[in-house]
Amino acid sequence: MHGGADYFLEVLSQTIEQVWRMCEQSNGQRTFPANLVVIADNTVKSAKNQQVLRYLAYLVGKKIFRSATLFHLMVGHTHEDIDQLFAIVTALLKRKQSWETPDELLQYIREGLNSLNPGEFQSCSPPDPQSSPAARRGAVHARHITGVRNFDAWLDHPLAVRLYNAFRQRSTWTWAGEELPEVPHCFTMVLGNILATKHLDMLEASVEPDAVYCCVKMYVRGLMLSQPPLLVAPAARIRAVQSHGPNLVHAANSLSAKQIETFSRLARLCQDKYGLQEAAKALFSIITDRAYDVHCLSFLRNCHRQFLAQDEGNAQLPYLPGSCWRLMAEFQR
Image 1 (cartoon, rainbow, N blue to C red):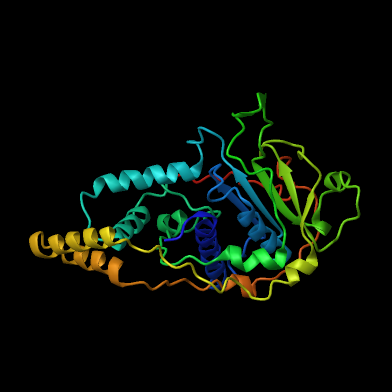
Image 2: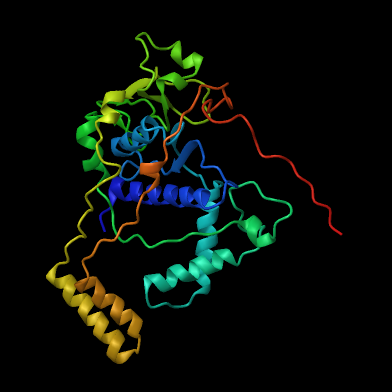
């Protein structure tokens, strides 16, 4: 499977699509979020690169989201909820002694997470006090990635912008004997007509209302931008993107003769010696099946909204709502 930024964007897009479908099927009970926040490891291979930022700029330029923020975690981020979730997944895997196929393992993880008590795994949506414990926990969605779209080829030519100079994992190394400055960890895409007053004051040139600007900070906790908002996608270039999503899918990585021989030998052992028929089928399919299935991304076609400037939200991220979780109490009988 093709990796890198396109793989990251495939996973991100399928996640957004899942949320979009849940909102569409809720009969008005759920509203598709106006702001996108992506938290990622500080690695240039998958998330910290121009391909991901171009995609976020497109989502904002097409008014799918009011803002799109990408911020990268610092060293030692085991307190983050995503790290805690993977700790739960690891604990589940330790209970599973063996499995034959990736799909079997995926189903086991899905069922395991859905069976946890509400206190062990919480939904990210505000809970309804009248709902059941299972409903308050939220649904778990796990999916096998069977194809990766070419997001880079889709957006590279029409947007025609090169973003560079800020994509390093960390600045603990030196160049010509001099220590380099720290790299930014937080990028927020917003339209010109959404820019906060304090950010508009940093600009010398006039602002294009429907263009996308990137607000860059060294750390997400910081209160000030590290530079004036940067124009990354003029409105004309957003309109130049003709299709509603990538039309190309990356071909699977070719297998070498040695890999084919190894998979074939393992498949025969599973089939003839160990009686693992499903494992044998899965191993043979790696050799013979070269289909690339991708799920439809309907949110790219259907979700276009109008956003107005609003009062600044929280101090660190002014383009997000200033609200927070409500304290609730439930008395036990």
